[in-house]
Length: 509
Image 1 (cartoon, rainbow, N blue to C red):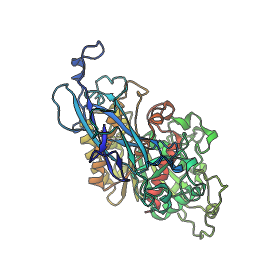
Image 2: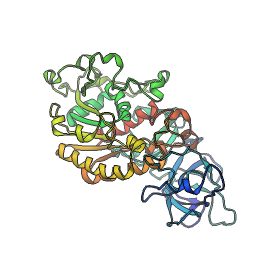
Image 3: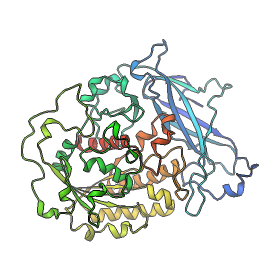
Image 4: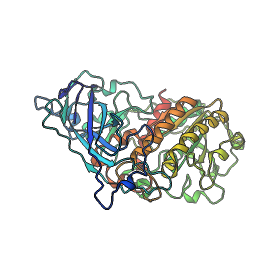
C-alpha cells in the first residue's frame, strides 16, 4: 500500500511517498518449515525480522493529459524503499513495516513488493544453514481504503532541478554516494556524451544522479589529477577491489568494448591476481605498482621502483582541450588529445584482504602495520573495501567489534592520510554460488551500514557507494542471472560506472 503523507495520489517532484506493508503470520503446517527451525535465526539488532524488497517502479511517463515525456519513455525508473518495523512484534504473528522514498521523475509509479526471507532467516550466522532464496509476491492493492493508493503519479515540473532536461545545469558530482536513477541512453540527447558519462549498462540504461552530474573523465586525466593531489594510494580489499583496479592499471582497456564480454567481464576475473597471468613469471606477487597515463608498464612490475623515480607530474602544459565531436566513441580507454603524449603517474600499494576475517593467510592485524608499509611511499589516500567475506563467513557481533579495532588501527598506521570507504556490492534475488556463503540482501546492507558509520566516525572517511546504483535497477534487471552469475562480482559495465563515481568524487572536489 502506498500514498503521500496526505493520502493523495498525485505528488510533486521531491515529495516523500510512504509505503506500508503487512506481512501475515507464519504457518508451521508444512514439512519444510516448522517453528523449531525458525527460532534459531535472529535478525541483526535494529533490522527487520522479515526481508522485504520493495520498489516503486515507473509504469508510464504520461501526465494527467495523457502526453508522454520522451525523456522517460520505457525508462522503468525504479526507486528502492527501505522497510522498517513499525512496532516490535512478539512471537510469529502478523508484522507491519513502513518505509518512505523521495520521487522526482514525472510519471506513474506502481509498487513491486516481494518477501525474501521470514523471521530472521536472512541472517544465517556461522554454523547455521542458509535457507534457499525464494521470493513471494505481495499484494499491493487495498480496495476498501480509498485514501491509500497502490499507484502514485508524480507531476511534471519543467523548472525542477531534477527534471532530466535540466540535468546539465547541475553541479559536478563530488559525493561518492549520490542518489540517482537509470535512464535509457536512447532517450537522452546525443550531445551529452561529449561531457557526460554515458556508458550504458547491458540493458542500455545510463546512471544519471538526481542532484549532480557525472563528468566523463578519462583515465589519463584521472592519473594527471592523482599525480598532483594523491601521488601515493594504499588500497585494501578483496576480489571486488581487484576487479575495480583492472581498468585503472590497464588504462581503461579492460572489458571496454561490447565485443569483449568474456567470462572475466561478466563475473570472475582469473587468475586471482591483479594482472594477466603472463605478467607473473616470478613470485611473490608484487604489491607496489606505478600507474602511468598509459597504465602499468610490464617492465616495472618486478623492478625496484625506488630506483626509477621521476617527476610524478609531466611538466609539459596541457594545450589541447577535449574536442567536441559527436562521432567519437568515448569509451573507458579514450585518451583526450592533450594527454596522449604525457607521462604522469601515481603509486599504488595494493593488498588483498578479507575484511575483518583471519582466513587463508590474510588478516588485517598482521598485515596492516607501520612495519608492513614502511618500504612503500607514504600514503596520501587510503581506500578500504570490505564486507563480502564478512557477510559470507563471519558473525555480525564479532564483525561489529572488529570494525572498530580495524578503523583505530588504520588511524594509528596512517595518522595523516585521508580515507575512502568503498562499500560492498549490492546483493539481490539469488542464492550464493556456495552453500557455505551466508549471502542475503539485508545481511550485506546491515554489515555495510555499520562499517560506514564506524569509518565515518573514527576516520572521517568519504563513502564510495557501489551498491546504491545497483539497488535502483528495474526489478527484472535486478533478477537477471547474468548480472551476478557467480560470487558477488559485478559485470564490467557496472565496474566502469563505479570507477567513474570514484574518479568524479576525487577529481571534481
